[in-house]
Length: 361
Image (cartoon, rainbow, N blue to C red; front, top):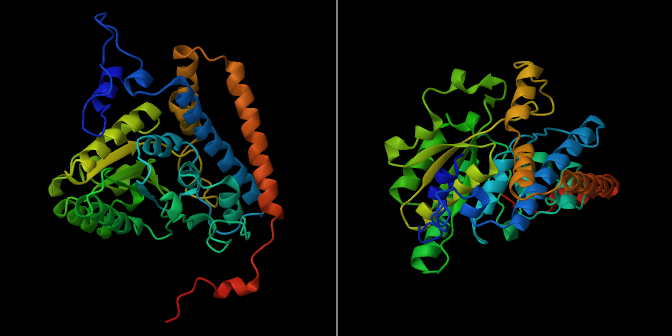
């Protein structure tokens, strides 16, 4: 993404650009991280967080193959820039809700590796006490509302969270305006409740950013075979502005999410972003992904991988040596291995846990 385009999206909460596009009279475009107001230390931290997501999910795949994880398991490998960019654009009390491909977003929202891996392995230390598994993780104190196994079920819930935010923003008059980031898979975009949610969000001017994670395949069907038209234009009949974003570029994701959040915080209603991203693995661990070639995946990795792109950027613009990234990767791998050891040796829930947190009817 061009630095000028990033600067155009680089707004503070009042909609004012944080930094000019050009240097002081030199005509040289600023580096994207400068235009976005990010320090070198912050960039390194976001690179670390994306790399942690990647290594965590790779370990989850390994544990699944070892039968330490059972049931469904949907990995986020390749899509890390979307979760990181959205979180980087958020305020402390913004809400996040997503589909069943939820591990990485749970981590970036502040859940610990032990809580997430413990849930994946069905242990008592899991965030849902080992009863929810891969698709059902929740932590309201972190403003993370799941993790939903039913396709598109999270979309009207996200609108509901935005309705609550609007009440806090408008009726209670709180100074910091809250937003709900509602993540939607491309496969869910044809579900009826998505359009019902768009309608209500537009009518009531709800502060919700609908983040479509277009990873190119709904289960095994490519998007063009299942969805007519452009996904980012699906909000147009409701008057919802939208745009398509390079979902493999952290800077592009951050700039677009910040722009969308500014729109919502100003009381202008919802905003729609289609993140053009790619998942490297199958739809779930049970999917061999034979509907595409290994060469297709390797080409995307080589050309667009979000973590490699961030590393190259840091090496070029911030003069970080490659050895720094190698050391960070080794440290992250060691941390993920430690988390896996804790998760796989933690006690399982007692049978009596079946009857807790159940509402009688």
